[in-house]
Length: 110
Image (tube, rainbow, N blue to C red; front, side, top):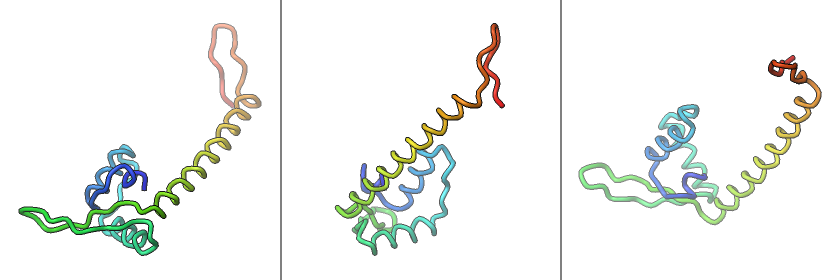
C-alpha cells in the first residue's frame, strides 16, 4: 500500500518495486499480487484504470483510494506501536542479560 501511496503503478511494476525495496526478501508470484490487488479493489482500498500501452498489452494501473490511505495509516500506527514494544524488549535484554564490558575486551552475550 505504501508503494501505491507514493505512485500509482501496474501489478508487474509493483512486484518489482516490492522485491527491490525488500532487498529480495519479499518475492511474490504474479498470480498472488494480482489476487491481492483484486481483493483490495473489491474492499475499496484501491481503484484501477486501464492504461493503453503502445506495442504491448493494455494494463491496469492501481492507486490507493481515501479508504486505502486510512488503512495504510492504521497499519503504520500498529507498526510504530510494535516497534516501541521491540525496543523495550531489546532494552530489557541489554539491561538484564548482556555481560558488562571487561577491561580490554568486548561485551559477551549469554
